Length: 109
Image 1 (cartoon, rainbow, N blue to C red):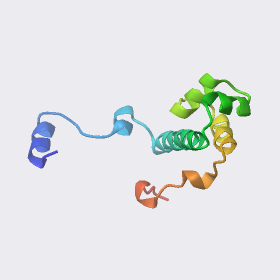
Image 2 (image 1 turned 90 degrees about the vertical axis):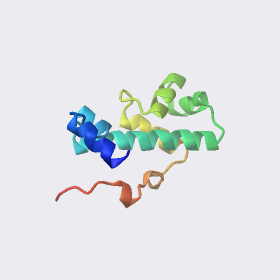
Image 3 (image 1 turned 135 degrees about the vertical axis):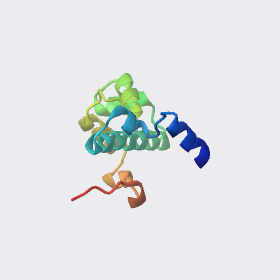
Image 4 (image 1 turned 45 degrees about the vertical axis):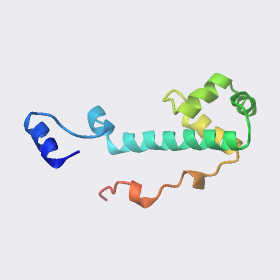
């Protein structure tokens, strides 16, 4: 956005930020959400790479297709345990979740 336009909007009372600012998320909550997103995307990518259906993955996990769909969407009502079991069931590793350091906010301490 053009700097002048942004300053005019701020002067009019508008504020700029991201979803975490809007929702008032702590750094820990934001990192947890990022982890869920990374795991869910990795599961879907690896499942599709292996040409497995959600139902086939669900059978491996002793779960349901709808649960796998929720897992792949990063739904908050899917446990991290199931998310990681899904990742490992499609051959994923923790290194598949590695983030480049430039995307991580530094935290004090």
